[in-house]
Image 1 (cartoon, rainbow, N blue to C red):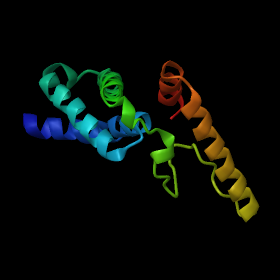
Image 2 (image 1 turned 135 degrees about the horizontal axis):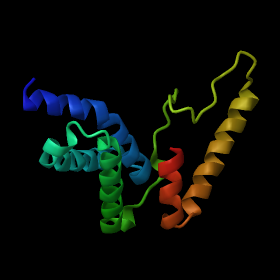
Image 3 (image 1 turned 180 degrees about the vertical axis):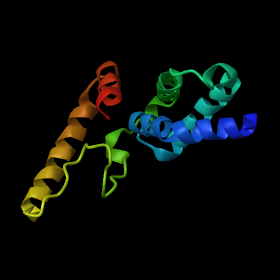
Length: 138
């Protein structure tokens, strides 16, 4: 397997984790894509040491977090967190509860209200509290 193929496999293995971290912190998929590209450029520069390293995922998450924080510091006036995220119908992360056969429209509205209150509470937290909470739970 060539170096190019190994790096391509490396990117495929970690791209979802890096992008998810970035989009949760930035709240904007386009900006998260830019940050993810930057992270993988840094990974390419360090690929000789990262390739077989079992801590590569942690390193990538740390680089992604730092890149997001740097981006937010640069563009503070454009901060948009959870209110800008597009909610997928199905979330594999376990954040949304699975629908049961007996759920009613009232229960769906209650869940939507709960999500909205959570997003508003997160927006009111200072950055030094919000960032670790987002990284840990989401």
